[in-house]
Image (cartoon, rainbow over all chains, first blue to last red; front, side, top):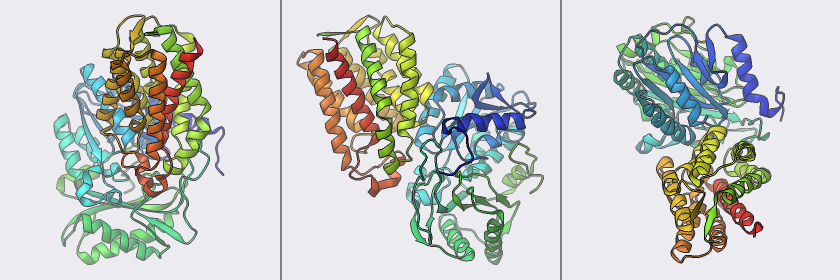
Length: 335
Length: 213
């Protein structure tokens, strides 16, 4: 293991300390608990609270999107492990501005079970909640089992939509509805070239040969559709696009946002090479791209590889992507 | 022994914590092959916190003890394991008396309710290569023993053996749920780490129970 860390068991607390020191003007912890990050900037009274939670090891997901225009709170777990239901409960209660709280998170066993318990607890404290689960990873399950798919980088678009809808002072039901509608139009596929290492485990999560890549891999190293020989950027972009279009067909005149997301160890340059090809292919089809997102949005420690997300837009979603958001890890001023 | 005293039960749970902590390397080893390698770490974290809590605090009613145990596990462990093993202790609380001891019947009903709560929470059942494959046979065994009005010691020995057989059976199962489902082929031949943990808990219960005699 070659990592720039101190004691492996201090990994998460030290990451949190760094973030809090860097962005203390915009985020804060709840009751000195370094596992619950809340927005500290002004929040309109009566705005629906938007919260998420998940394991560490994916920055900027999840906590990086706590801030103006996106999330009100995030409970932080250990590396690749859900935070506890208790932390989620405290966070939900703190994020309630009187209009209820939307729990928006990826479809993973630990997160769904802890959120289920947290939501029961919060309702007991008279906080109205709704849950929307992100299931955008096309490679994790075939189309007929789409309800069981994992949540990956597409959740960033969902955070943006939910945050913007909440800022419009829509009701909890309306925010949940529009966020779900957005997710119905969001698809992602990832490829991995190398594994990642959970600090406390100290070993790679899987192994992959030097000349191979894994097509469809999840952000914890979950196996994808197939292991194949390494290909050129254009071929990779083409296979990803073909797979995404199979699941969510696009036609001439459609507008989409495209996210090319580096998994941690893939240079931005390579991400732009892939974006270039995707853009050309979509243009050939008569599909236009609105606010492309290229960079690291949902990583998997030092994993090399990237994911591509397509978000099929309508006027409302375009407006929600455009409206200002500014968190320690996300801004759309530069997009 | 026909009734389980709260102090005895507390020692049994303390022993289970110690056994889980001691087995962290083994749990990590199997989870590295069929999961993402963090089951042992999470269990050690949770049961270390539980151990510290039990050393500091004394309980006078069995339901209060079990409630505190479950809450501590959910709180300190996180992950899927935190909810699952926490629910194992919280899910059946209504079946325990607010008294300083309980009967085998109550113990069996308590773990049965806990098991059902895990099934509901995890949307899982038997045969999916999860901790339930050890817990379900242990619960069935406790219920049988309760029906036959067996002694506490014999009942826990049988429950422990049933859990161990469940672990063995989980070895040839294909994983259908949880993160290990992503390691389908690699997972065959290895037991489910959660099932191993469950069997360790029942084994520790039994060993502590007979130590006191």
